[in-house]
Each structure stands twice: as structure tokens, then as C-alpha cells.
Length: 239
Ligand SMILES: [Zn+2]
Image (tube, rainbow, N blue to C red; front, side):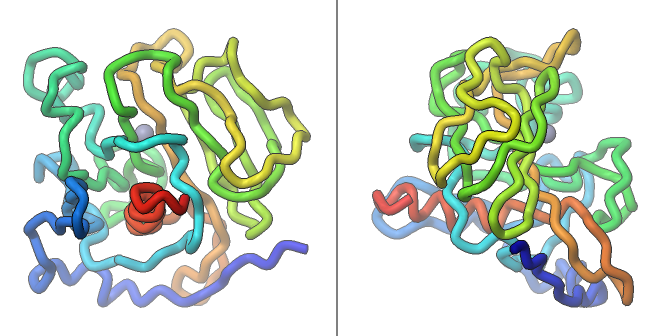
């Protein structure tokens, strides 16, 4: 049985950015710090969902096996194709605080983004700038529903579907139809995007049915707040 979580979204309150905290939050006793959900960096990279701190995927495991990991922009970060010149391996790309990049400028149709278009999920760098060293893992128990050239889909018990992009396809640990337990290895994070170059990172997104206005819609929902919570559990040794 899958029970899609359906709830109302009050769009009017979600984009009230003015009263939001703009400084990074620090996590008690750890080095981890993160900017609030919806605060994109640099500002010209797009309009995030400031104020939407709703945890769409409560209790998920962080999708990379081990900390540290870094959520920030691949496109507008150092070495990115619209970012400052430099190496993709620049230390600044491997430093806290995290920056949300859901709704970053892209051509994808995205009803929950301010412009109706944007990045469908978030991009996560692994501990170091090395291919095929760090495992992406199942965020919840579920079944592998599809494996594309650089995309693996996991449908969780919750009914939510998660996508993992840019894993090394030759060393995938899963096959279509396989049932995974929470935390089970899926594959190694790499820079696989077919013939298009990209940085070494995991693109992670989550699709679920929610109510948009008065219609139920299956949409890519904001993963950042859920990932901040999951990462804190990982840092606490209780992933
Ligand atoms: Zn991405």
C-alpha cells in the first residue's frame, strides 16, 4: 500500500522572503552549517522557495553514505559553466555552509518554482573531488523502478519517487525491480551525464503527489529541508 501524502500548499506564505533568516545556521557541536532553504547563491542563479521549510520527506536517510557532503551549485560554483573561473575541485566547493539549489535556473517545468521553471532537485558533492569513491544509498526502503544511462529511480514505501543522477553506471549495485533496504548502496557518485560533461556530484530529487491549488499533482518537491534534517542524523551517528 502506498499512501501519497497530500496536503495543501499556501503559495502566498511561501515566498515571503523578507522576514527569513539570511545567515547560515550552525549545527550544535559540529562544523556543519547551512543557509536556509530557498536561499540560492549567487542571487542571479534563480529564485528559491524562501520560507518553505516543510520537510516533505520526513525521516529519510541522507543519500550519500558518509559525511561530509556539500550541497551547493554545480553551475554557478567555481569551475561551473556559469560560475567563477577555476577548478571544479576548488576547496570552496568542498566547504560549508550548504546552499540550496532547488529551483536554480533551468528549463524544466517546475510548478513549485517562482518562475514555473527550474532545477528539479539539489546537487550534492561528496567529501572530496574524486570519482567513484563514495556511495549513494537508498534514502528509504523501496524498489528500483528504472535505470537509465545516468539516472536511477527508487520508489519508496512512502510512495515518493527519488532520482539519483550521475552515478557510475558500470559499478551500479542495483538492478531494475530490486527491493532495497534503507541505507543500501546504489552506486558510486561520479560525473556521468552521458556525453555531456558535468562535475562530480549526486543530483538528488524527490517526486510526490501534493495538492497545488485545488488539484492533486505529482511534482518535484523541495528536498533541501529534508536533507538538512537527514544530514544532522548522519552526523549524530544515527542515520
Ligand atoms: Zn542537479
